[in-house]
Image (cartoon, rainbow, N blue to C red; front, side):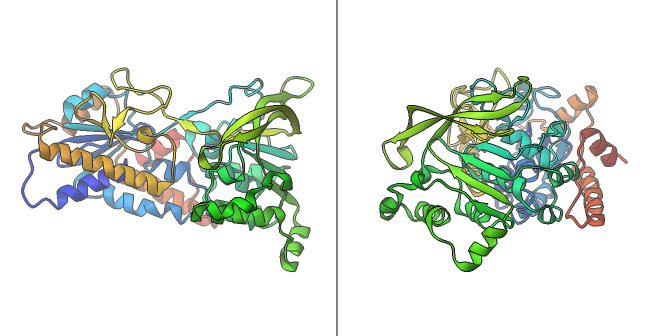
Length: 467
């Protein structure tokens, strides 16, 4: 959402001739909207901005969060206004936004979980990665999670960057985590954690893992840990290296080194001292979460053993008929997020869990656009999302310039939306209000040697914002 607004503001700021009284509206992340009426009005469901940069990026990746500086510049632009604590679809409808603005851009992300669809996945001890990440990153809706970390082995299903983030947080020394913006309740729970071994399970092979080399390297070098791989999983991989694209080749070489090579003296000494273990497990799919004798919580997971048909990125996992049971007390499913429909009047593809679109133009809905994961599905890194958001902004501007988007007459924009919200008893949080929250969080963090100590409830956020 912010990237879309950033590009639209930049384009219009650079226009040499005056434009008509334009209004755009962009929905982002939780339920978050932007609007231009010469201004950009950002409507966000929570009282605070920045979405996944705050609630998704790992706490030990502060450099990734530097993009907040750019977003802050966008929010403080003379043509931009932030309206937090506004739930689009409840406090104001999509149709009301479309009546108020020349264009509406949906950018509310993918807040749903893809379920495993196996028996036992609702047992205590099974969590989605989305909720687990939200718990340690301070998402208000996830603060009741209180995961039980009293087991020795955890199994993470999925081998993307989020899966590796979760594994790293579970195994990181507390001295590393205590200097990040991880929440205090999560830090205290992890300090008492009994988890000593984390298995990261994927249905395909080493040459199909979805993580990037940066996240894998962080696991390989994580203090106090050592890798534990199955050598047979890498049969034939060395011979196939020469045909791989360079990024995939480098990633696979790092896996091979961790799995098969004899470490040097210094690395062997480090591994000998390690008290915690992590490992990638390939060619495995979950078929059942196993319960303890009381059928009250997780005691293990049953995995189907797969083989691959085809090669490269297009290889498919096929069941062999073999199964394998792994004892564990914690299962975290990191098999993907999915977008949810926001309004019956907005087209939605349930199978792909996206809004159907062409270059961000929502099908059969003139003036309606989408960007981010709602547009593409939950794929790629922040740079990927940035580029696809810029593409959506370009589509909108092209339509405006070509006449496909009618901007010949003025629309009321935020003026009427603000009136509707006031009538409904909704008092938005402004960006200045957010800065009050920001300052309190940073002061509390400074007292603990952290970048910030996040406020964890909407009620306290509002209390601080309105003080």
